[in-house]
Length: 409
Ligand SMILES: Cc1cc2nc3c(=O)[nH]c(=O)nc-3n(C[C@H](O)[C@H](O)[C@H](O)COP(=O)(O)OP(=O)(O)OC[C@H]3O[C@@H](n4cnc5c(N)ncnc54)[C@H](O)[C@@H]3O)c2cc1C
Image (cartoon, rainbow, N blue to C red; front, side):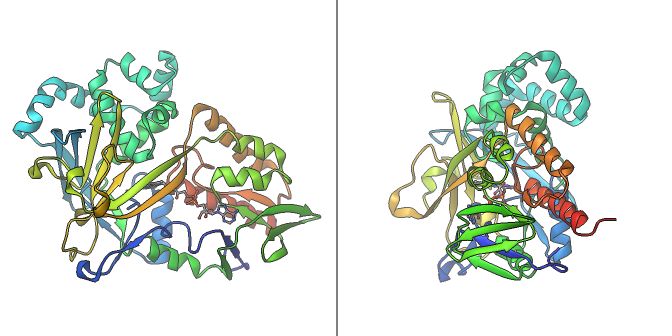
């Protein structure tokens, strides 16, 4: 769209969304910028994002998504080994003495779970979920005969990390897409990251924007005839079309004056504040160094919550990091403050059965309302679990609709 029309961007922060919270490591460690958080993607789940990456000429590289699972005290109870072969990937339990006990108790459940998610179709899953009449994800899994230790010590840590939210919010996700997300993230497509990180993608996307205003938040929107007026510290500027691509908490406020129905729909999107800490404290890793994995989950069965520590040396493309660098998501054990490099907080969109209905209506309104001037894009707008893919997908749909309006057949 940027090739045919003039695009103006207003961004409240000092840089484009994705990478604005990255951290530059010391010269000794190569002086690279490391994304916080290090977002990962795969070709099965991220078809629209991969298309965009292809269009920009960027490339991706494989990472081993191999996870380990430990209790809060760092004692590991389960570990996997990932084999990346050509374009596919397979993760198998590591049959070490450490994990044998867990596998003896839960190995059959593990096998049953993977054959279930690999063989069930979306339609069969929807019918089954409907038949079980389960309100929450764990109710459904219990009804299917999975033990609490398997659900909360294996499945929920994975979902909590994929969706970066706590167990109560994982519980509320619509059951079909959350199970499909698990399948896509543990399937045969290798886990990848963008070479050059978020910055590389941002630099490419930015070339399509004519005027980019950073540190300029939009304060208010109004409609005047067939124009939308954007009010910011730069004054009032009018545009033919405006896309609100902010978090839902801001989007609903901006929409209120122009489209109150959309405000009420967006109001139903749950959001969650989550924290990442970049540090050098190996006390947040498994006690046994042999169990260290690129992704290390920690489960506290008493409080029934989990967190994860990512071993960045295993996830970055460049291999000149001299010292261990970790990123911990919502750590259940705090790192030593003297070893902390950076702390970041994010507000992210989630989904629930209620929000699933609301976003469906939002999408329908954007499709059916003729001569529309104000649009919504972002990870919460398209169906499924709000991730990068949903953001890109929603933006593509909105751009196609605007182009249709600008160039009627
Ligand atoms: C810790 C963490 C890890 C994640 N890891 C992954 C991952 O591995 N893979 C994945 O697919 N997804 C991941 N996600 C999710 C992914 O980052 C989000 O889904 C995605 O960033 C949402 O994109 P968005 O464009 O909808 O909104 P955002 O990225 O939130 O962008 C909204 C932008 O709007 C700006 N803004 C807000 N109000 C205004 C205003 N009034 N005026 C101007 N600008 C404004 C904000 O500054 C912000 O830059 C992760 C999220 C978190 C929090």
